Image 1 (cartoon, helix red, strand yellow):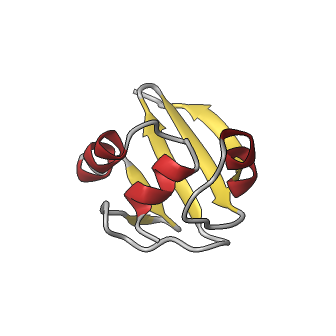
Image 2 (cartoon, one colour; image 1 turned 45 degrees about the vertical axis):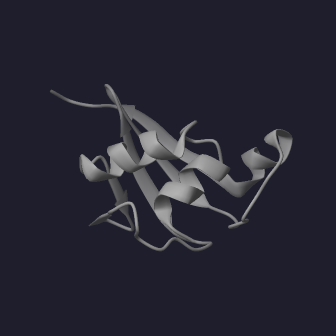
Amino acid sequence: MRLDKFLKVSRLIKRRTLAKEVCDQGRISINGNQAKAGSDVKAGDELVVRFGQKLVTVKINEVRETSRKDDADNMYTIVKEEPVNG
């Protein structure tokens, strides 16, 4: 599944266009590699997303084409959140 679609379906980011912009700005990495909006993600991958002044590391548990709001939380696990040093 494309990274931007996963971010939207899992509700880590509310809109797909916003997810694409975040990817294009270089604020997301998959397993330590810089990610683009079209990058493929799969279960077991680790994403690091920079939201403003914090880094959020999540592990992908499963990839689904669609999900209801209450099921979206099961698609990933937050490994850690840390402030951005700067």
